[in-house]
Amino acid sequence: MVLQAIKYSRGHLGILDQLRLPHEEVYNNIKNSKDAWHAVKSMQVRGAPAIAIVAALSVAVEAADCVESLDHGNKHTGLSKTASANATAEQMSLQLDYLVTSRPTAVNLADAASKLKIIVNTTASKSGSDCRAVLEAYIAAAEQMLIDDVKDNEAIGEYGAAWIMEHARNPRDTKVSVITHCNTGSLATAGYGTALGVVRSLYSLNSLGQVFYTETRPYNQGSRLTGYELIHDDIPATLITDSMAAALMNMRRDTEAIAAVIVGADRVAANGDTANKIGTYALAVSAKYHGIKFMVAAPRTTVDMETKTGADIRIEERPQIEVTNIRGPRVAKNDDDTTVGQEIVQGSVEEVSIAARGTRAWNPAFDVTPAELIDAIVTEEGVVEKDENGVFQWGKVFDAAVADIPKVEVPKTMDVLPDGTTALDGGPSEPNGKT
Image (tube, rainbow, N blue to C red; front, side, top):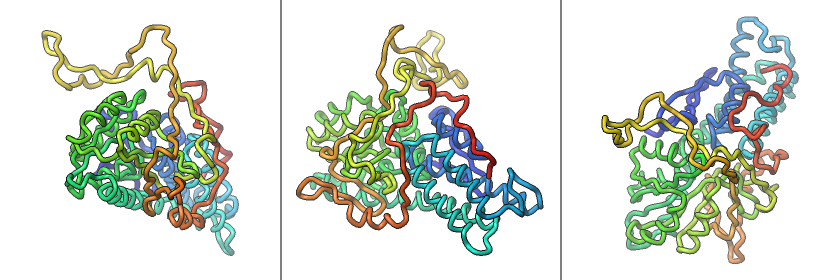
């Protein structure tokens, strides 16, 4: 059974706290948009698709609460049975704008907010529409996004696996191994995953030898989160440090049948340049040198046609402390002070320094991989490849979505946390009135 990181039923939303993984499995209740804002900003939930879904559903939870209050004739957060449809739509739009500020880099979040605002405003403009109609329209649309995201991820997995077996596999190999980076699975989406969805599809087809996953320093999304998912799903996998990837390609490409590197994306520019977790660029360079295919797996909402090239994306620089310090539980020890394998001491999470006192560190959160190094970009509509001139042709993959993907002005800056910290005590002021 695939890991479930988002648990939702009408009026209730729970998210698996990724800051507690892999040693504790704790679900946090999200009761409103303020809870969602802090969960996204503090990285309790991360991954562009998951951020969008959690944000959308948080407002749905508030909307369901409001409907229940209306049923009992009570006022709720400034809205009542007599509230106009337009006033309701305006308040919900403010909630969505507020949520977009949590991580403005996440194109999926801005796209979801834009689509949902269109739905509530369109519903409000209909003759005879009232507060309840707007709320119910929003709830239905947000719930459909959750369903669609899982379906889209499964399609990405199927298209990606088929492409690898056809274009990247050595004909003598019945199974292939792949390398992946960061976390792109159920923890980063509504379920199944993007790049990790391709891995899951290969595994379901009995076509996967194993997946090598990088530690993904300095936040360790690979060792903490991807490893947690792979072990949960019993998928054959081996952890490597980021600096081992090139050596792995060189020394074990043939013996392990390493066919491809598969990564996700935070933003794909119109020309195919891809912004993703720091370390992606280095993997692409190594893959190119060793003749290994490099695939980006992402939903089409991650493609930002308003960003022409990767040069238009400025990269967030996160706090130095994420590089110089590391968190984790203590390892259990025997009486003679030797360690007991990987057994941990429950409740012993500590932060320790791993660098000399006074160390200065550079900590960009993302890098941009040039389109020249990318062989394929797989979306839920199919695989996009370059033409004879080396240009990605989006064709029907993007054209089919133009009508149903409203575009908004999305900041080009990778979001910088306030005060240079990762733990936030507050955020932007909430909009006046809540839904």
